[in-house]
Amino acid sequence: VYMKVVEIIALILNIIGGINWGLVGLFDYNLVDSLFGEGSVIAKVIYVLVGISALFAITTVVKLAKKTDQ
Image 1: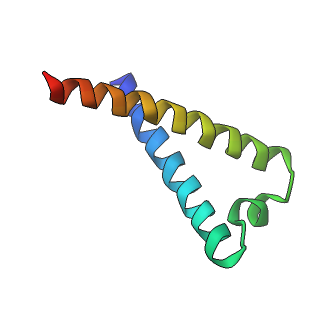
Image 2: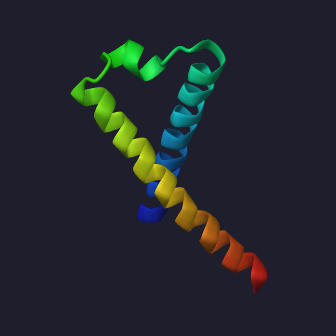
């Protein structure tokens, strides 16, 4: 159950990060910085959490790949 919750949180953070990068790429608009202030502690924490969730997502993909190989 714990891992399921962590996976859901990681997925949500990855979606937030993906949407933010899409906005930056398309419109040069950083939603996280706009909401929390450029360079603010909260914005930095969000960026770190998104990065950690991306690393966690890599481990999830590896686990899924191993499952499908069996």
